[in-house]
Length: 343
Ligand code: KG4
Ligand code: ZN
Picture (cartoon, rainbow, N blue to C red):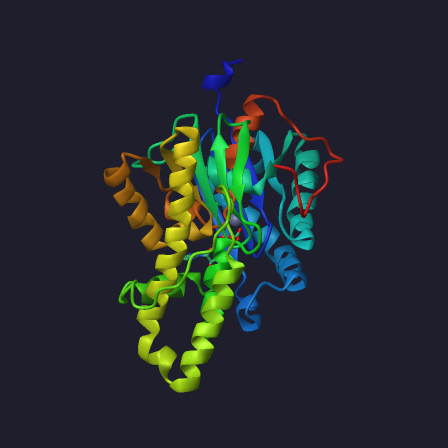
């Protein structure tokens, strides 16, 4: 038997925590396939409808897994391990991926690894990808998604400590809710990013919330934007159309400043200046540029993952599955999906 480090470990990973059904196959830490089926149905409703999401997962899961295995150029009998998202997320969605993963691990008689979705967003940085450096321990991770906003001190693959988080809305919600106020379709984050690129970030100054320590709050900003828009639209019904780029740039600038203030504090408190970002909002071009500038300005080293590993995807679940496989941290067949899960 070859040594573990020389063995080829094929991991099938399944992610179904929210509204994307995804399956990936990894050979050790290299991604062979990463298939994501997005659910367009939610756009009509301006947000994710949990019941519709779980139904769509059920329709998608078999074809998505099938394509992932075929695209990887292997058969299911080559697999050594099945990793799946245990939580956090929408219960009905998690159950589809979790039940499928359990059945498949039992049918193939291979180990199962239950993965925390938020840790996976961070450990996605350890996927082996040309042109992308891996952080070294310890580092700070800023996880910014539609459901979470956290600063995590990452000491090792298995020792991650939340040192700051949102007390109300997540940063993705701040983007999406602001976009909704502007009449933009869901999810509005990428559209704010797009319009912001043409606008003046200092056109409309918004105040930043005062929150102690490393925690965040975004609900006050949303209310501030709502009142600002209502007041201006009452005076000029075309206010949004005439100022869309400047409004989007100003909102984005404020959100980035809130994030940067807390990152600076986290660096000062921990003495760690390696920053890795993860989660859907790390696709934001303003955040990416600001972090790159911070390398020169403050001497930080920033890690920005490949775009397809920032939003929800199964490859990030697979890399966590692989490292747990090496340590033989396996889950048993009675493992349950959890909408809320301890970190
Ligand atoms: O990580 P993710 O795909 O799903 C969750 O686990 O929440 O994150 C989705 C969030 C949405 O709120 C979406 O609007 C936001 O990421 N997002 C962006 C951008 N791309 C995605 N927000 C700002 N700028 C972007 N370019
Ligand atoms: Zn996510």
